Amino acid sequence: MSQQDNINQTDTLFSQARPDLHPFTFNQAVVDVFPDMINRSVPGYQTIVDGIGKIAKNTLADNSHVYDLGCSTGSVSLSIAKQCAPNALRISAIDNSEAMVKRCRQHIASYRHCSTINVSEGDITNISLLPCNMAVINFTLQFISQEHRQKIVSDIYRALEPGGICIISEKIKANSESVNHLLIDLHHDFKRDNGYSDLEISQKRSALEDVMILDTLDTHLNRMRTAGFTEISTWYQNLNFASMVAIK
Ligand code: GEK
Image: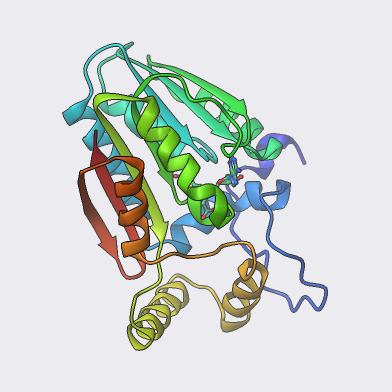
């Protein structure tokens, strides 16, 4: 099978019972099924990605610099590039999974777009951000240990030019335990409706248990305030998945 044949496979990673279940990582097997996995697992994912492109179109001037932090296959970068004028932007897309970075470069190369998208391998807990006009961290903070999260958001605030946009999307937990249970049940229904079995849902949940640590929406908004943002709002929420925007 060629590299190309492995692209965009259906996600069946957790469909067989796996007694030796390892913690979830963004390895080659995950990269090969990633678009299918994220679309069938995250309610509103495509709406959020499209919306981020629209937010960029409505807020960025020509010659803007944009960060896509935890870029995976580059969907956010491409959405922004497609919405904005040709050559208007420089986009820096960063991910710490070597396999994901390789796939991201292939994905971006297969589209016609005119803005420059630089894809690099890097750990966003450990990079120096250059001045920018927009920074997006779409469903990635949840995979970063909690003690590093404030530094990342504060670094984004410092790097943004006045008027710059920060977008943070996350799976969240509700303040109330019973509402949280309800949202989890509804999310599992969403996954069942998208063809995942109960075994797949429970094995994926176990694999993610110590890897994806969720905060409440209040914790996220407070972290953004602590970083220095005062203009903050949730612009999208679907079940326990939310996207927040802040303007510096
Ligand atoms: C999208 N934003 O399609 N540094 C850099 N990247 C990291 C780090 C880190 N420390 N930790 C995890 N990642 C994308 C979706 S997926 C979300 C983002 C999901 C990367 C990891 O390798 C993976 O590619 C990404 O964060 C999370 O809009 O799978 O639910």
